[in-house]
Amino acid sequence: MAISAVIFDIGNVLIRWQPELYYDALIGEERRRAMFDAVDLHAMNEGLDAGEPFRKQVYDCAEAHPEFAAEIRHWHDNWTSLAAPAIDGSVSILMALRDAGVPVFFLSNIGMGPFEQGLEVYPFLREYDRAYISGEMKAVKPHEDIYRMVEEDCGLAPSTLLFADDREDNIATAAARGWQTHVFKHPEGWQDCLLKHGVLQAPVI
Image (cartoon, rainbow, N blue to C red):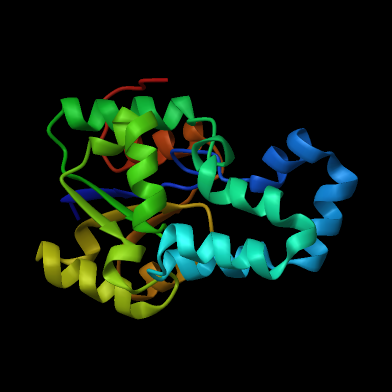
């Protein structure tokens, strides 16, 4: 079946999201490990994904863990360095799809505050037809609600949606709803998938 829209996850598809690497460079691996063992920073971030206020969520966590307070506040104050760099091959694919007039959606677990910070640094985050941002929707992957909300909003048949995400659990829910899917490992594999589906007519990377 022909593809009506291509859907990109953002973290680890368009922008690297590995905050541990940022903290390794900032404070060294040993202290980073101690901090992540003492503080569930990924749980804090899941709150952001679900719509918790960006600065308050991070600063409350910092206040609760004074031994790491300065480092934790980087999650807010320097978020665009945590979420870096852009994955250039994926950005090239995104822009090629836009140039070809292919409808492009984003579907990402990300808070609105982080997304808005990202817009200031990554212009390609404005290159979409529809953006489904978990922090705004108050629903997160891999729970089924967010996929249903996408379907209801765009009005397209699930089988005509082609979705790339780096997490297999996120992909599994989409596939169970009848979406076409791709587990993202690297831009070249994503390009091959798009070529196979006839969405891209020629390689761009």
